[in-house]
Picture (tube, rainbow, N blue to C red):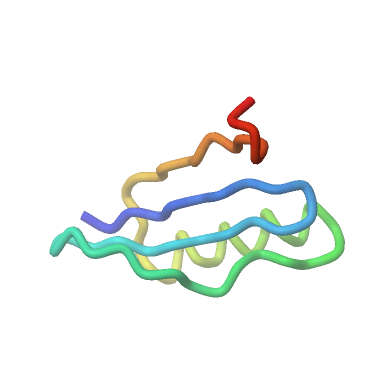
Amino acid sequence: MNVLGIDYGEKRIGLSFGDSLGLAVPIAPAVESAESERFDHIQSVIRERQIEKLVVGMPYNMDGS
């Protein structure tokens, strides 16, 4: 199963790819200036890598809040 990890940020969206071996590796982040372009970037990754599941990280501040 191909999995896309998403670390959402307002200006930069970090991405990682995991496959059936269970190993996740970072891939090029979505850093386009417009939000719609960042989502287009993610959509193309989903298509190209045949993603079946998304995992979205929960952001925390440095103090854990």
